[in-house]
Image (tube, rainbow, N blue to C red; front, side, top):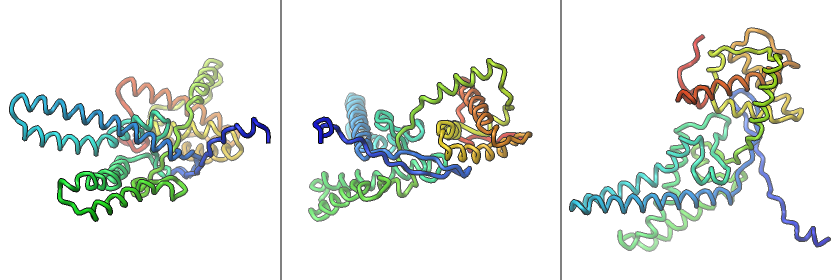
Length: 303
């Protein structure tokens, strides 16, 4: 074996999973590494700790200056509970499955069954973190002050350790919260295609070859989630991707009630045109302060 081969670092093993969307389309996603998940959690915990310290200092400063020490302690305990439980939920709801730590490392939470990520799933997976980590560790480190026996502290430590190690014992790197909520943590797909597709759409419009024109009602059917799914399909140039685009295109034609038949040879051009129009429509809505996350968000389109 050559010296170069010996010194070559092994490539990161990619774990690819295929999930089926409600439209019947299979999409491939890359699972996030356990190391990336742990790193994201550490980043979030550091941010959380700094935020809690800042809040504690501010509360004690404000309440101490007016002689409300006991009230200050109550507010501190309540604030720590709220910080600990709603930090992750707030960001995953606002950033579509990402926290600052996950965004930094390029990973995100998605639904394991191809559905849009719901607030119920985010709530469930993050409340499980309280059972997995915070409550057991709270018992371990405060047992002496609260009178908890050493045996209970040992049991709590084993419980927390077993649940923290759970991602090492299943093929999809799922922690308990993911099992309960039906979620996966995946790598954020590359977004380089969007600019290429927009440029190709602008060239198509400039040449006057755009044969598809969509109404506002047809564009209101879908949201950001479906736009990202469509982008994934258009990125896949394999023969298998062509079959998936055909299946998805037929579903879109039915959903938006497109009046004319779209033949197999026309489907890619139809999807590219719809992608470009939908992206422009959604971006225009964002400029007006309107954000449509997915097809279930907001009132249904007018028939």
